[in-house]
Image (cartoon, rainbow, N blue to C red; front, side):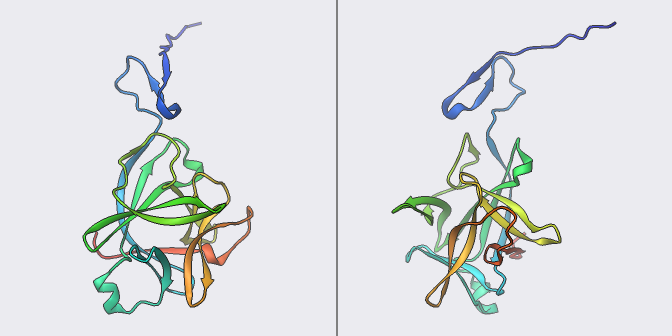
Length: 196
């Protein structure tokens, strides 16, 4: 019987319970690290595009003409894809966009006991050491619909990006959806915006 040598390294938990290995520069911290950026527009089941108006603090799906799409104000998203150690949850992504030479990122905040979507001025970080209110898990919408996706909020299982009718708007919201329920309001197509 041949015994193999097994190297054991001391571990250290840093801030936000991030896992580090002492004396080994080749091992990475257990964190989300940005891998690539996709430039896309998001379309709902009604073929409307998601348009963000940070000055009004509104994100809604709207009918958009070709000319409006070319000008692209508030509808061309950068989808930041992160590497993960838990791929079964889905691909971790964050959303940002440029409006009038300012960068905004999407995040979730609790307000009056309800989770809401906000677009805040600033950049998406390259590394996220722990949980973050900007991360969503991109998943296929259904097994037979591989070109459409749903985005689950990373900090609350079963909470998805969706839209809800509010007057004449189809406003972007976070919606609690029971497991295995198919809800068309959270179905989104992710379409190239021709910048890549």
